[in-house]
Amino acid sequence: MISNNGHALLTDFGYSYMVNSSFSLQVGDPHGGTLNWMAPEALDGAATSPEGDIWSFGMTMLVRL
Image (cartoon, rainbow, N blue to C red):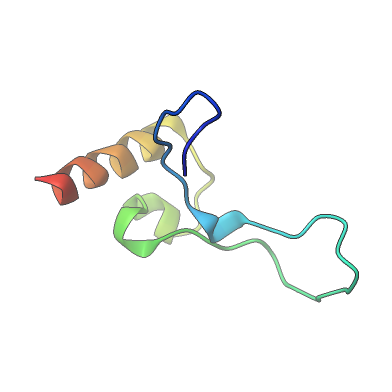
């Protein structure tokens, strides 16, 4: 994705949802994310945290090497 200023943005559609949809879709609790980038504690059901974000950023950097 690209911002209005032309900067590249990182994104993940694991927690995405539809707003103002013309249909209804029944879903359970929000469990999402991309496994390759999720912190180990997130896989155990822990809440999101800055530490988990750092883990995800680190995984992104490893993939880019």
